[in-house]
Image (tube, rainbow, N blue to C red):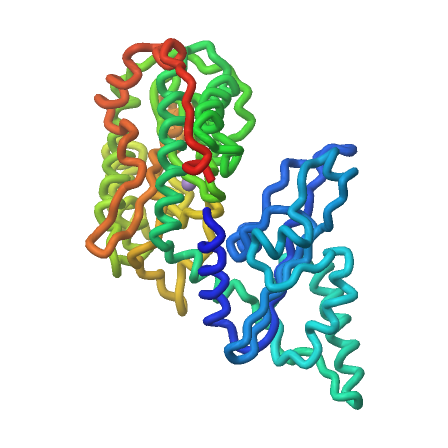
Length: 452
Ligand SMILES: [Mn+2]
């Protein structure tokens, strides 16, 4: 992403902001254990407004009429620290490379913020995200209000800026869509590799490594979420990330994975037989899930509601559960009573973008939100049969989910992940040469410009 994109997004935020000050804090560094940290991932809101990916930073946006100011508080250059943990932009870099009107040392943030808050009519603050930070800012505002006799006051109104920012994030620009498409292509390549590399006897973690290996060599620094590689009954655990069981001959394998690239994520699920051939029962169940997914995708268009998309998929899943003999009764009643829930317990999908479960509302004034061109939604129905006594015996140990990423367009929709095999025949054909991924490994070179 180029800097102009962040400037544009910042301006779109400022356009909708009333006079006042907006303060954004970078995500904290998270300790893994002892003196080792988790890899740093900037907070999406912070990053999307700044393009700045270093911890211990604060972004301040000020607006008064047509006057706008962007102040970035960053860690100053420090040769010794940089030797250990890498280069910093520093104060000069913050102005030169990140478009800040002013840069300040982040260790001075709490000295400088009272002055910036003084006599501002309102403060935009993501309150609740960091209660300790909220508390300190609140104390500073109280202190300012105690200075009323000196014509000093703090903001009277506090507004959560996410009410503006998340709407901006929900409706993707052409540039956002290009970035998501690129992440989807890499995700697709990773899941495809998994489908072609799986061999019964392999451990789930080996398969997860194949998927992530493809992600990384195609420019993704990290998955957008923990890769799910679940075989057999493990696939009935929706967010199974242990990935440590041997994959058995005859089992289905569910991969749900997403490459993060350019700070957006893809999100694809495919379910396929470990040995490359569906059994007739697996095929029957699989085809109901596929039919449900196709029905849900077919409803994705402008002005359709999220609820309609969900219902379209759910109706087919319930018809399938009846056909399979898992449920009996009237389909409408089975839906109303939630009798299907032991087998399908999640919603049809979610917004996709900088976060895999991207931000943005699903309801507006109590009504299911209407789709608009520029939204990206995952469509991921599933049927799950955990290995428990209440599951009909023949289905136990099966979990099937099929997930694609769908862009709402002005005329309908476009499936961004369409190139990955999905029908029973296409999957079997694709997997036919077992182990073929291993023999076809060639280096991938991507120009840096494509990755950034
Ligand atoms: Mn998903």
